[in-house]
Image (cartoon, rainbow, N blue to C red):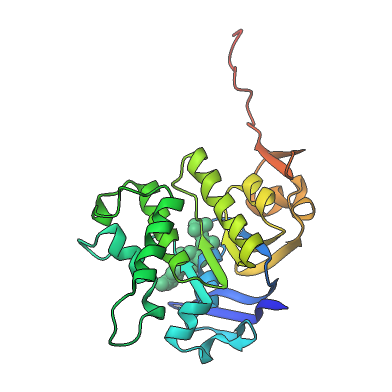
Amino acid sequence: MSAIVVRDLHVTLGKAPILRGVDLTVSAGEWVAVIGPNGAGKSTLLRAIGGLLPSSGAVSLLGTPVERLRRRARARTVATVAQSPVVPPGMSVFDYVLLGRTPFVSLLGRESFADLEAVRALLERLDLTGFGDRELDTLSGGERQRAFLARALAQEPSLLLLDEPTSALDIGHQQEVLELVDTLRRDQGLTVLATMHDLSIAGGYADRLVLLAEGRVVAAGTPREVLTEEILSRFYRAKVRVVDGVDGPLVVPVRSVSADWPSGS
Ligand SMILES: Nc1ncnc2c1ncn2[C@@H]1O[C@H](COP(=O)(O)OP(=O)(O)OP(=O)(O)O)[C@@H](O)[C@H]1O
C-alpha cells in the first residue's frame, strides 16, 4: 500500500516557484530520504506533504487527500519534525512532549495517566530522563532536537516527516535516534520520509533516495543507484569518492589540493 503519494506538486513562495512538478510515492513501512543541495526545496516538500503549505497538485496520505484530513485526524496520521520548530517560551520539556498527545485528548478533557506514561517512556527512549522539568529553551541543540522527535512520536503517527533530524546530534545520539526510528519502522510499520544532508547516513538507513534539485526530482532509486560520483558532482558540484561500506555506499569528500601542500617547498 502507498502511504504517501505526491503528484505534480507545485509550491510558490513569495513569487518564486520552489517546487516545480514533484512526483513521489512512499510505500507503507518504507524509509525514503530526500537529499539535494541547499535551497533545492527539501523542507518545502516536507511541509507541503504535511499539509502545512498551500500547494497545487495532489498529496494523499494513506489514501486520503491531505486537504481533506481535519487537524486532529491529520495529527494522528502524520507527524512532522521541522528543522527549527517554534518553541513556546517558558514551556517545560515534559509539557512540550505532552503536546504530542493532544490528538488523543477529548476536547474538554485532560490527558490521562496513559498519556503521561507515554511521555515518560519517550523521554527515556530519547535519553531525556531528568530533563522533563527543564525549560525547552535552556536545552542544548542536540537535547532540543531529541525533544522535538519525542513530541512527534507522542502523536503515534503512521507517517513521520523528519527535516534533518540529526543535524545537531553527536555521533552516539545520531545513531541512537536513527536506530530508534528504524526500530519503530520495523516493529510498528512506521513510514519515514526524511531530508538528510549526510549522504552516507542517508544511504545506510533509507531504502530509497530521492534527489531534489531546483524544485524537481532529478534522480531516484536505491542508495547505490543515486549515490554515484557522477550524479553527486553534477548536482552538488562536489568532488567526492564513493566507496563500498558495510551498510551501503560511503560518500567521502576529496580535497582538490593535497592536505600536506606545500610540504617540501
Ligand atoms: N517564504 C519564502 N519566500 C520566498 N522564498 C522562500 C521562502 N521560504 C523558502 N524560500 C526559498 O525556497 C527555496 C527552498 O527552500 P527549502 O528550505 O525548501 O530548501 P532546502 O532544500 O530544504 O534547503 P537546505 O538544504 O538549505 O535546508 C530556497 O531558495 C529558499 O530561499
